[in-house]
Length: 262
Image (cartoon, rainbow, N blue to C red; front, side):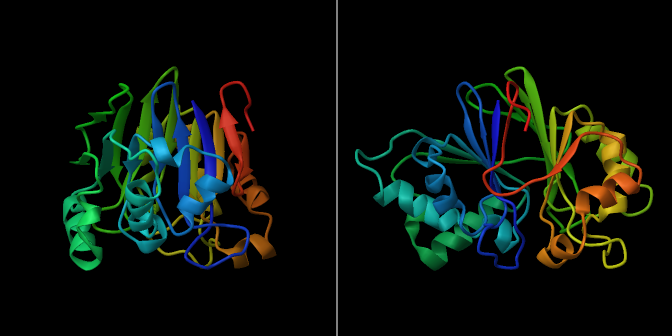
């Protein structure tokens, strides 16, 4: 597997960061994990294969995670020669079909009929799906929105896990950590400081608790609000809170693969 950070920002616009989007490539799959604003341009800027994406995984419906979906589908329909024919599988929580239907009503039928098969799968905990290439896609509910989910993708000799946006109310680290446990890479949000955070996001101390339960090979920290990044060493805050594993606060363009563990 190869993992590329396409967008590592938040809802706050930044000149060097797009909204949330990660690109995961295996032997036969090219997957987007969320598709926030700026994602399509970010893929093109890094010469990533937006034209031949096989799967899109949606963790929840906030705009900084889904805002570029219409642009992606519009580009796939009108921005390719020859025209794409291969299907795109969309994986998301309950309500994903309703989201796409609403986008189609507002923006046009190309959302549901982009000129190639669009297959929408609504996932629930305990009932994983499989991509056409055989990767397992499993989910676990998170305390962020009514529908939000963490995701684990397993196959091709590796496991990548992603928190999406999540809180960590007291007593919940063990269950979510068990779901995320043992990933080669855990992509985890760390939005706010311990003093600012509520129950719907992670902070350094809460992330340290979760990552200590999950025990990934590498912790990628993302979705840090800019005022937190500019005032604090976020990596050091997570370490000081008790996490002893390898970690990195990622930027747009960072990459990981089994042969290059960045």
